[in-house]
Length: 177
Image (cartoon, rainbow, N blue to C red; front, side):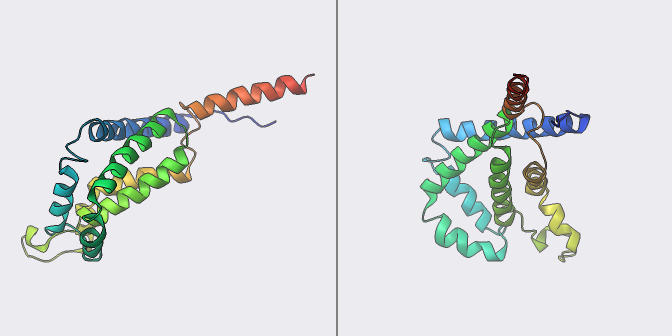
């Protein structure tokens, strides 16, 4: 029987996963337990701000034609989604699934809110690297989610790792019978 040893890398990845989870719990809980974001127009405020020049051109019709007309249900989806992603990451359960949803969410935010505007730059022209500079606030969490989804971010400091240890112990005791 092969055992899985917890390495320093596993612990570092688990710490990053937990930190990202805590951030998402903080952002999700205020949206879920308050009404300002979901029912008070907070979500619509942000989307309208994105439409004032921060959305990538291909996202503008999506934001105008789908997101704004369905703003309240989507606001609840965002609020509960952030909380669920955060709890999954903190607890270390369904990390891969939560990370895939987090990755999709961060990419949606990146393309909705991080289009670099030429007027923000002195010469009015955009270099290729400036698209990445404008996207940092959503790009780095997206990269973390991709790492959690395609790596083994649940090997340490998680409920799933506790279940695996108990399961292996149970299998060993049954094989000794």
